Length: 59
Image (cartoon, rainbow, N blue to C red; front, side, top):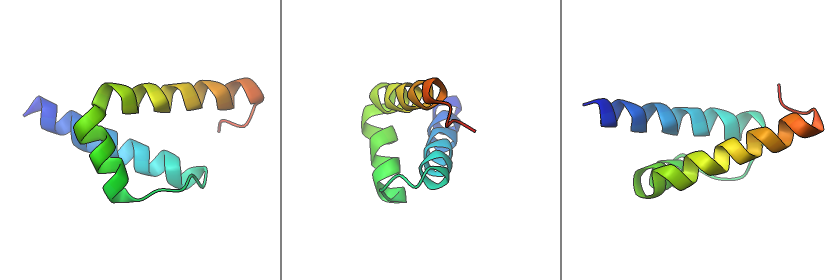
């Protein structure tokens, strides 16, 4: 059950982040990314957050 909660919250976080910063994509792409490649999708999100923080556009 814990793994399912992690997946759902990760998809929601990815959708929110993508929407906030106008990053192209879809809910289906977000779900597939998290479902098939969870570690890579979360690393991608973390790298993007770090990049935006460094440039001062993370809010």
